[in-house]
Length: 382
Length: 134
Image 1 (cartoon, rainbow over the protein chains, first blue to last red):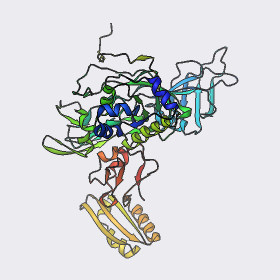
Image 2: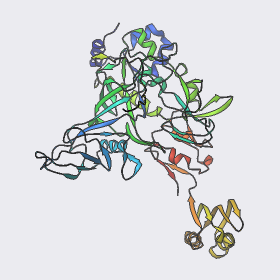
Image 3: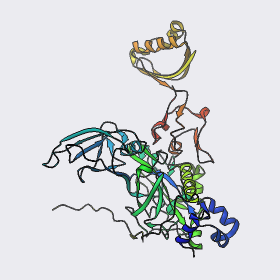
Image 4: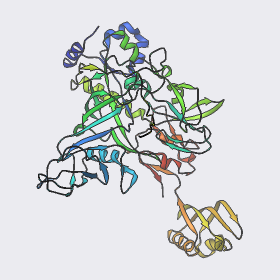
């Protein structure tokens, strides 16, 4: 049993052995669990996919005379005005009032991180202490105060692959799905994916220091819709969406290489978020989890039109091959999450740790485990 | 010399006009019909590749406008901004000829020869990095 304190000591001495969640697979195959466990201290993971439940809290600073902002727009994208005078939250999926879905909250966040000037227009009814009723100016990441990303749900632990049973093309957050099961899309970094490498969240918890958007972030809570009581393969990996994380990080350290606004045709705006989580190899069991391969990670296939119940699962090696068999036919498959950027994230995090710039944290508490997710019942209003 | 690929859509008034003859004779434009669907006396559309001096091609386009023929210019292929592409692969979901495909290196590759300029990828790209090469 290794401790995080011991691993951090090795990081400070430049002696920690850090490998990515892809590299660990071959090392374990070559050396076996016991020897590999003795050698490896940290395994880094990475993912870069569209994560709608993301956004940034901003404090603009006070103008003279001051304003209590109520109706707030950033580059014509509405931001939340229901908190303190010059605080706001810009959510990734909010569309522009002028450009619709072609520009939205996700793009404002990307532009903010890029250091671009962003037009701020805010209205207020005015109060005795905040007399100003309107403000029009530009802001950027250097002239505002705090700006931190707070993402209520990121890093979904597995996600069903999507297809379309109807005879019309459908436009979804899982991309454009062609008629009559014409294609299958899936979104994962598979063997590199953070929560697929720690399926029971034995190491990841509140306070875990992570790579977020190119900067340093932290796991702050369980993500929304987090659930643990799901169908799993023998190796513990869930077959459907299960665990999620709420993440926080200062945008001032982030890069647009790892945070990008996105548009899903006839669906809406989203944000590609880069997340990398280090997994300390505290015991052999954890090493077993991180050495999981794509061929052993299965996901279910779902009809996104909601018409047909499909009883089919595929592993990510099959999905990555470009084609799978469905109903006896060869169906093309396409990814939605960037494996090449996920690899970049896992290796960047590895470099940070190797250089001694990034130490691991002890989690404050484990992720609270909700057994199930409630659905929203439509009740009559008296 | 310049070559452009374009689609013409016309209403019944234009169907009876000798468009191809005029293109060749009046504007010295080489014309290759790639596809045509014309209901004589009603309406039609035609996909053409036309080649000629830039000035003459511009005059030919003016000629279409005069005849109230709508035209849409296609690129030879789609163009991808490689700097901005994140290699997510969403475009490969809709590419009918697999001109866009994910390589073993997990990067997006584009085989220009296979591209039929269907343009489905342009809107399937969440980063909006694909456009028509004009």
